[in-house]
Image: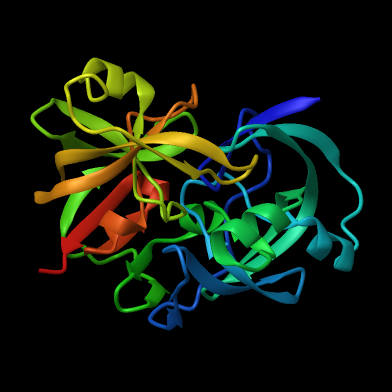
Length: 292
């Protein structure tokens, strides 16, 4: 059985997909609602094979993930079985299904491969209700996107204009895109750019060991969390500071991510909501414009 990894809610495959990431001509200049749910999760309206759904948006998911109940409605009953490891305590089963059409933000992406899994547990724990779909990076690969989390809007941005804000190179690590950050007084490290992370800053256990974050006398708490794969207990500390795009955040709660595939840092909605964001995954770029 083929295996793949999940980062937070994100899906990162260890295989290379043959499907094209290109999209039909998008509707530029039109803004779409970006909802912020309980637990700081982002949702957008989408259509899967013509069926309307409210979907979680996840920039760190390499492919879209559909709930088994939605797949049943759409008669997506074939596909290769795979084993997944999420941010929770255990692995889970999923199926890869091709030939799916995704529509969102004025984009139409045909012949996509999606993963089918039971999302009922993670939906109930994170949102208090079921999740139909988690839209992955197909949208980010297909077009330049402008995102204003605090303004609750998202749109396809014109590719021929220089966006506002500070530009950073996106560097791919473990199948996800990363940006530079600085934790406390340490050297600059790479952080997963994760709009699917509504749980706050995550610190990989390797970085925590290098910086002695669990042994320097600061308070270490335990809390339960985790996405796909079930709930698990994690260590929580307070960072003196973390800096991104020249913006310094002080006294930031951070959860230790013990997964072997974890990046040094994972920054999600809690920090990224302080910027207007323009992403251009196709050209490995992101612009962050501080709100104040």
